[in-house]
Length: 324
Ligand code: HEM
Ligand SMILES: *[C@@H]1O[C@H](CO)[C@@H](O)[C@H](O)[C@H]1NC(C)=O
Ligand SMILES: *[C@@H]1O[C@H](CO)[C@@H](O)[C@H](O)[C@H]1NC(C)=O
Ligand SMILES: *[C@@H]1O[C@H](CO)[C@@H](O)[C@H](O)[C@H]1NC(C)=O
Image 1 (cartoon, rainbow, N blue to C red):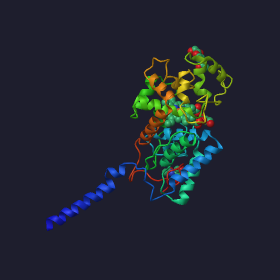
Image 2: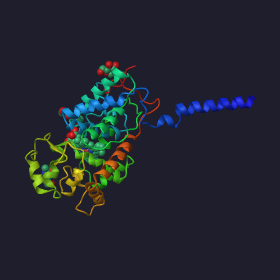
Image 3: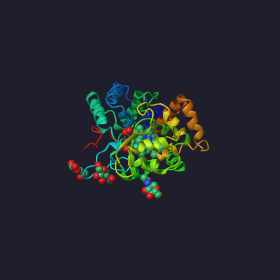
Image 4: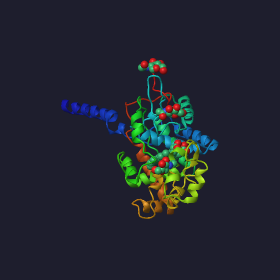
């Protein structure tokens, strides 16, 4: 009798610890907000749809924010923190400064969520859901977003400068940049398909259009009027010259035609002889395969070192750490 009641207590104790500190709390779940904030997903979706209907490029900008969040010490909302007199965030890092956008849209989503369920939905989760909703709003296929990330109280300018891949990388540089985050080459090629939407600045594609030979000559010429050999650094051109506001597989057709805008883009296709060329052709020929692989790779990206359980916090304002 005595021993069985001790046994029961041990069971309860173990169960309590398992619930609170076991693997269940470290794992994201797509139903994380279903009782704590049942309208979270519909609130984010309607804000994204309205932002995208005002400006289609915003879908691209929101997708990129999630990438730049996750590649820098995990998907923890660190990219959203503003610099202050005594805090250095990631916004002025080379890949981010004068380039990341969509912060106002995230603020407005956050304030809508704070008014329906205060202190519940993290900024990191907002980015993950907004990225998915953006792709869908621009014509891509959906995926289910695992949820339950929490927000960081720190940011890392130096990690932002070193972990986000440069557009001047070679194929082997791209492969190792993604491999260091746990991605296969195949997943890297799928994630790069993000560049089927959005814009880039002259400063990141200038060398490609003036100095590279693996570029369609008419395409290079057409870009030069918008991007002089010096000056005009911030002039934008579409990453996908054909359908930059539609999430489709045109990015891969462009590569086959030597019309990748960034040096790094064109690295994925080298006239049939490159190690990733067959995958580029497969995605061009079969957009459905691209969509499926893209969604799975996005889920994997969203799983990069999330803060869960009692780690981190749920920021009230995505731009700053909660005070007190
Ligand atoms: C493969 C390595 C990658 C490199 C080298 C790279 C680099 C870049 C660069 C240089 C730009 C233009 C920024 C500017 O000129 O302001 C850009 C834009 C963009 N990137 Fe990437 N990127 C990569 C992967 C990704 C991934 C994995 C995603 C998303 C999952 C992504 C999403 C985007 C989007 C959507 C834009 C357009 C943003 C806008 O119009 O606001 N990129 N990227
Ligand atoms: C940091 O600066 C802000 C003003 O920008 C101030 O309110 C806050 O108390 C400071 N925090 C610390 C830890 O010094
Ligand atoms: C960021 O861009 C601004 C111009 O908007 C520039 O003044 C500043 O020096 C840049 N910061 C860094 C760290 O490059
Ligand atoms: C092209 O290459 C030449 C020779 O290396 C260099 O001097 C020039 O600055 C480059 N131009 C651009 C736009 O990158």
